[in-house]
Figure 1: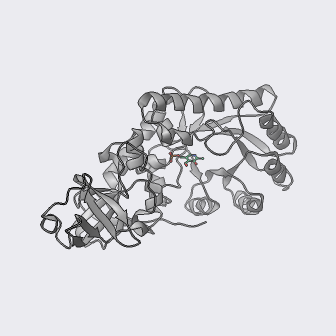
Figure 2 (figure 1 turned 120 degrees about the vertical axis):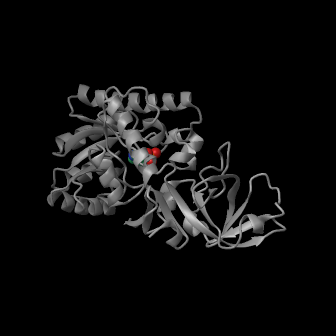
Figure 3 (figure 1 turned 60 degrees about the horizontal axis):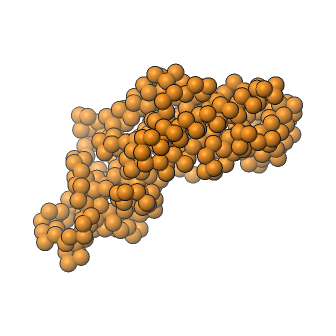
Length: 373
Ligand SMILES: Cc1ncc(COP(=O)(O)O)c(C=O)c1O
């Protein structure tokens, strides 16, 4: 199988770029002296995680119990389920642990901590810390942090430590802002760990991470592990944030030109939002890429062109400057194949059941992925 044989639309994965991204993050965290626990929700693909592990990753992070099930079945047994556990999911989490999976769960409330201690199983637990006001977690200085810690520890759960995710790093646009956010993520999580320890509670694990902060941190003193996910594919959002370049974007959607509306300056392709996803993550960036950035079939960027509109199975490719080129049908004849780089690789990848992995020698191999819960 080669690129020319692939039906469109499909999720094309550039193996050399994937390898570069894996090595770049691993080497950076090795130099900073912390373990990398990649978030496998980006690719949801065993073959990708095996490459991350081969490069030196220790354990994985998941966002669903289905990911935990699938990766455990494939031989990954050190798993952090990094979404606060809903008490009805404790039975499934416990079943995984009883089968030998070292699954660690997360809480940020006394109620969830009490559900864990009341379950009759000694779960390993991290407390989620809010380091940026972005989403979940307890504040590092809060009384609640110690209440949760005591509820777990005194109730017979195995309190393992703290974790945080500075999702607000996606709003950063300069290296200075990124470094400051990485330091905020680190220092607030370490502060929470220090408070637990000062209260006589165990806290061996200090887990932080997002791709922007992981690629920007100057030092990670007090941190034991970093979680990062989207770095493995990179995307236009990460480029807009300033932590990825165009030639690091490993995932694209291969599409075929199916029509033109020459008076409007439109080239129609067979990849709409069902292929790209509805994610418009660059809408508030200095460069808004619509639904994606357009490249030639061989990956050469067509800087002037973007997917400015998307219906379910139609993508509308136009020039960024709005100029209606007279020769669109000659430039992009029917049947021309284009690669479209996505805004948010996790969302685009989720539209597909497999990756078409393009090796340096031009051969293509399918790697399955899974979706759902
Ligand atoms: C809890 C948690 N940890 C780590 C990550 C990884 O972040 P990124 O994909 O920016 O690397 C995420 C992503 O949303 C997350 O929710």
